[in-house]
Image 1 (cartoon, rainbow, N blue to C red):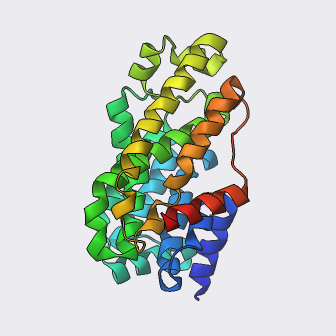
Image 2: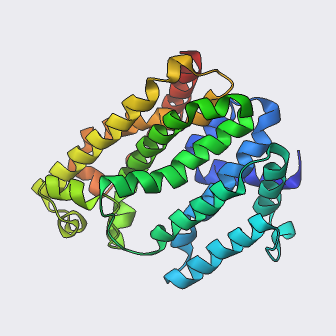
Length: 276
């Protein structure tokens, strides 16, 4: 195993425990590619936390675009960039998918409202769903395309759970990912959610949980027909239902305290998904 792969695995284990656990269920010869893909996602997802203004974040996203096109200065010395470039070449992954993912992540750098559920689905589709599809291509290129719809729904469910788990961080910086039309239907405003107004926030949380569950049920309809070779790509999404249950149980406490699942529970849910 190369030093770049070791660094990717270390980063994923430190920053994304859900995907780190899923790696253990993937074939050994696929783990380096998956680790590079997931480490790339960690690098991109945490850009907002590392910059104080949007422009440096956009510059960092552009650097990754340059890396993918072969023009990124210093890419060879960056372990994640080096591992990702090798993974793209080895598995013939579509660079256009990475470009769309990077474009979608520009939204993270600003505090603009998410206008609608359709916009949220599009954002999740270009980020979380794309990651699932790319992972599926690494695992089994011949089977991956059959499950693009499942990846779409699984990505939205994963993103809903992730957004709700990140509410304490997002509220602290005045950022709201919950769709404006969903908030309006729940009688809540973005300001209510940031301020933690009890009744409107409670209704908004319930509506977002229901939205996530709709997509979670949709992708699970394909699980019985999904080859086990592809399933490790969907294991992080297999945790979404449990997260949504915990968030529902936490209620308003989820506004201030991140909701989690224990490592044994995560491992069991992944194991069960592989066995169904």
